[in-house]
Image 1 (spheres, one colour):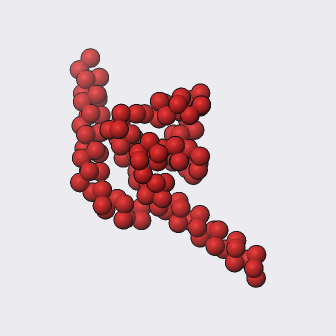
Image 2: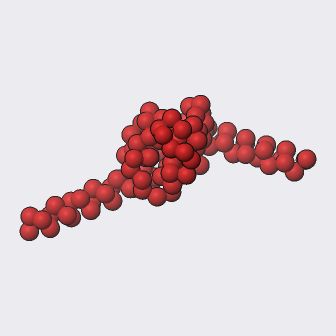
Image 3: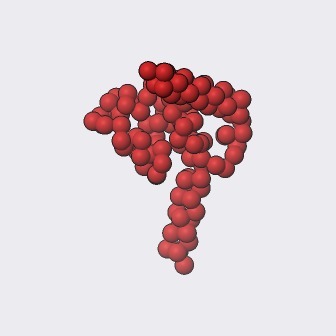
Length: 114
């Protein structure tokens, strides 16, 4: 029983730390070129009173796995759902992904016109 309590307490402390970090470094997170870590996204969702499971059910998914996949790999439809829940844009949460998409698009457009 003590082990479970310690684990739960560690999770609460970690989530609390993540939320505090995000609040204190919001300008850095938005201007930095790196994607938000999945843990920070989950903490922000919790702070907004929602979860991946709740977002999944609200958007017609039977499981939260599609939304969870968007935390780790590109999944544009689910990225939009998560960004809307956080009242921000997908480009602010995943700037690296969108920079790569813009580069590929520019390369494709350049090759078509060449």
